[in-house]
Image (cartoon, rainbow over all chains, first blue to last red; front, top):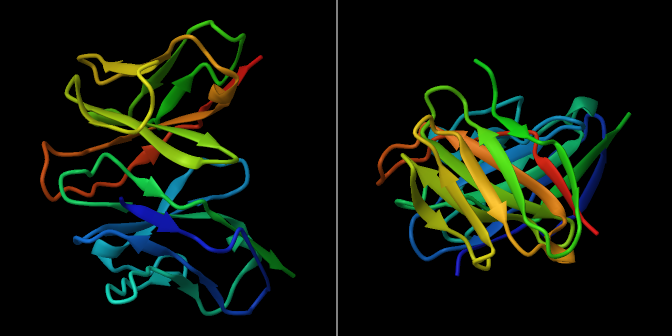
Length: 110
Length: 117
């Protein structure tokens, strides 16, 4: 079965430190991976997705099919990055169905 | 563009009752997906509707059902409520095409907080 795992429930870093939020998935085919973010008192929103290969708000994520990972990285964390981050997966002809990880709460301290 | 709206925002019901939640997608979006969010299970996919047809279904009992109208608005219904149905129910809309390689962004609503007593 398809599954997304985010091993850290909480990640706490200081402002200016590098950040890496881990995401591993299990799916035998070619998945499409996403990172969604939920800031305090805001809606869940798309941060970035593998297919577009963009850098959003300084965040990047690389799909490693060998390690089945899609870790989210940012070289210098900012306080405004504090939020809940969810890794999600979908696959061919299932675009309306997202499989989410449990989420990682990122706390950036001043 | 107005975002996805969900009504009501909060709901309190008792065990055994039924409940209907409503979702209005972004104008022009034809796909509506529903998710249940709980502290223990996280975000779980319930079902997706596209052009008034259920296109996908998650692993939930038959007490959970939904429908979509011709204007793309969607409702989900939960019958015979159980305590474990207490959750935040999120809907999301997208410009999803008919099928195939389609990974359009899902836009989420604020959710309906359902409490079952």
